Length: 638
Picture 1 (cartoon, rainbow, N blue to C red):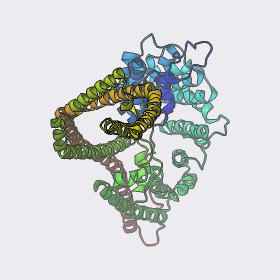
Picture 2 (cartoon, helix red, strand yellow):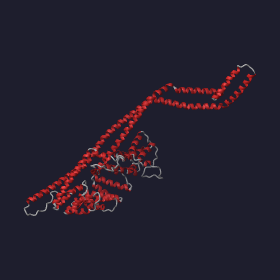
Picture 3 (cartoon, rainbow, N blue to C red):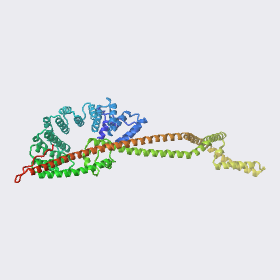
Picture 4 (spheres, rainbow, N blue to C red):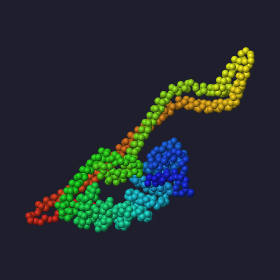
């Protein structure tokens, strides 16, 4: 159902792929994901992590990171709030956003699921308002459920005539018709129209089905009609109706109790003992079983079997006293605050929010009583709220740990800055960037001079430059040598060697000039990058302390907010714990009060029997036949 709520809230529909050839007027047009951060939010939506999706969606909206998906983001946020049970926030958003521009099919489903949440939370007036916002029919299954929901709202509000008017003319699927007829019959009974309720509830109570839900509904219909006849003092009509309730169903105990009272109302106490004695073998936690502990001796008293009646009354007192002690133990553990921790101990990995349901009860003395407590709507909703508080507490602890980690990162960055600052200041003081630029200009000037003067030896390899130098030195020596044939021969050989070397140098000169100019261009790029880094170092020298201080201030502020939220959460959690403990104790106290009333009634009846027996013994003359025991002074009522 969670995914249906989100679809109704338009979130999932906004992320569908463009596949349909023609747009469906009942759905939103397909939307392409244009903002990366919106896709990130949808990832957490599809992985059922609604809390993380809400957190990121609010953060991204705050930083204006969803410019292309603002309407869908708002609808998605409403659906997520609805999924978490935050019905007030979801309702306010839907009322603002579900305008006539939204397709009517989407609007109808959104209002319907919002009505379901409000009904589950007990806000009946808001649930009715949301249902009234649905315009036109829903799909058949949802339309039937909507009528059923509205009927339940009217019944819980005590507007029985309105519920009757709604259900009388409604037609729908077979299963939902059965629920509608049951609600109609209950409304007629509460309106005092038992004659009209009989055929309606009888139709439900005699339907043929193998579905467990409908079988349970049959039992409820027969039980409601049967007890209505018992209370209307028409036991003859009640007996066949109560007889249709299954003996192995969840309502069999109440049906057995009602059958016994119908037989007793007809004066057939012997027959009434059959269902009541069957009840005595069942769980004493059931109110019907507790009442049977008094009904059995009452019937024996009516049959003048005073000894058996007294024995059953004494047995009832012993059972009531033992059960009362167990109730005291359970109430003590609940007041000690151990109940909720035990309940949620194995549920930590389950989903939070409105759709979470408790699946297992702990092995504890009070667990045998918690089934009745958990059946209450208020306790179920309160338990969901408490579990959400526990989840928020864990989340705040995790966030608090993240703030500490970020604080450590800031401290590490400050220490690193302090360590590197002297080296950075020393480097900035050298003016290395300007010196490198000056040297580059010098190299460029030398290259231009070499190219312009045709100094081929200047660009030669180290070996070639060494050879050219040697030739020049030999030329100097020969210039100062005395003239002669041998000197001329040396000069000719040197000229040949110099010519060969010059030829090689001149041949490679242009290529080498080009290579040197390319190297200077590469050097220019490196100098630009060095200059940029130099500027960044200068900027970081000034800005890092300010940035670090800003982040540190934000982290400190966030830590203070988290600490304040944790304090509020602890206070709220304590109040919620007290509220749930109060509900549980009140439920168990009702059982104690009922047992106390039964104990008083059993002691009174037992004392009355002993008093009557003593008075009869005193008044009897020797040889007289003892008369039958009179009826008890007070008769238990069904």
